Image 1 (spheres, rainbow, N blue to C red):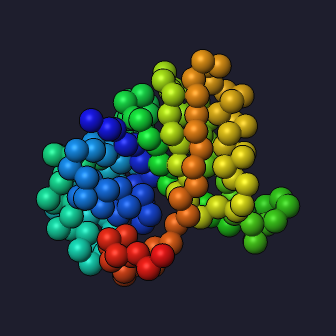
Image 2: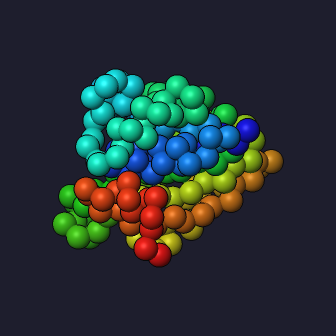
Image 3: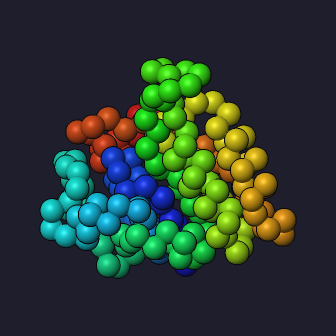
Amino acid sequence: MVNICCIGAGYVGGPSSAVIAYQCHDVNVTIVDLNQARIDAWNSDNLPIYEPGLEEIVFSRRGKNLFFSTDVDQAIIDADLIFVSVNTPTKKSGMGAGMAADLAYIETATRRIAQVATTSKVVIEKSTVPCRTAQSMRTILEANSNKNIRFDILSNPEFLAEGTAISDLTKPDR
């Protein structure tokens, strides 16, 4: 069985990963986040976000092949594929302040993958990020990991619109 980890249980990571679990019953999907309250909400009857159709998808797969956890390290270790779907707010200071994406969360998640992974992984960037972010992720992975571990980096641009995320994922127009 293939194991997928999604780092980030927000508006992109939650619905995107839930749809994968819904459509691929032979794939285990674990969505992880450091925010315990957010994970508790995903594990409850009151999901932390509302999207038409999301509740049905989550409730039908949760506990079967869809899991929510704060144990980021274990999810990384178990995963074959890792989606990095973390917040990329606008920079508040320094070069590009007020305009450029702050990649601190991307860099932190990537560094964690490098430090924790014990086997080769496919790492997929699924956040709103500038071009060449995958290159930066590769540099971080190579500089911080065991040299015997291989990381393949993919980019899966985020294209969801709030309110239509589930239909965007299940019936994409491109």
